[in-house]
Length: 303
Image 1: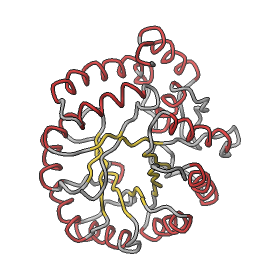
Image 2: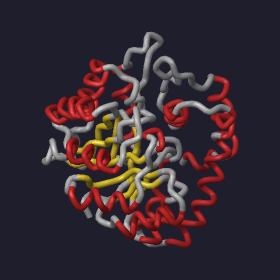
Image 3: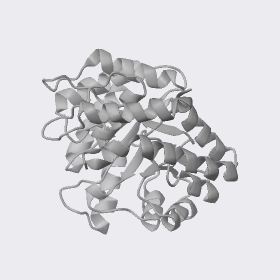
Image 4: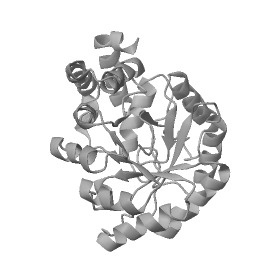
């Protein structure tokens, strides 16, 4: 396979009331995540507000992330979201020169790309950095979801596309990913990871790892060790706990980062809940509801 099997965790960016990056807290979050045993981290995805930061903030966050992920056996990724190939390559260039070699990219979202434009984007971005590796984040915000057949086409001509991130697949489309593009490392969410394990080697994109780290690693271990029956039984318990804890957040439909910042704080980091303008976030009251459910009903899941 082009990339190793692992649990992938997002590090969110803490903002003060003037929308400035809180450097010491960002460093604390990265160190805390590593201390939990998660060594595959990324920044600046959708939950990390990579779509919203200015260039100076992007560069400062990348520099801090680089300094904090120099340990042996740590595999950091930098997410890059942009409206054009040029904008994406510009930010990749900065992070590449800093020392990063793994990047997470999405299709430009201003207008849906056609088949020729899709292939050109991957060739022009990934081809400009032949010594780097790339993960494609497949999400509807880009106005086009790639299929397994399309990943097959891209993988055949873009050798440094090594992974995908798919959180909206069905049972059948998950199976197709593993069947048609098996050399790519497909990162699946908690809902489809067990299904992926039935069909081949895949990885876990974990939204809830920071909140319940030991249970998340147990979930992943059942999959990687082929304990399929235990994996599906454990998934039922895992998703039941998660849905109960986050139920207060289901009353609103907010940006990805709003949910993830609550989860990070539930995991023990004093993460401010605010997002960058103009996006709204959850109130302290909603966070407290989630915390009360987690600690009163599922304290054994925190061990």
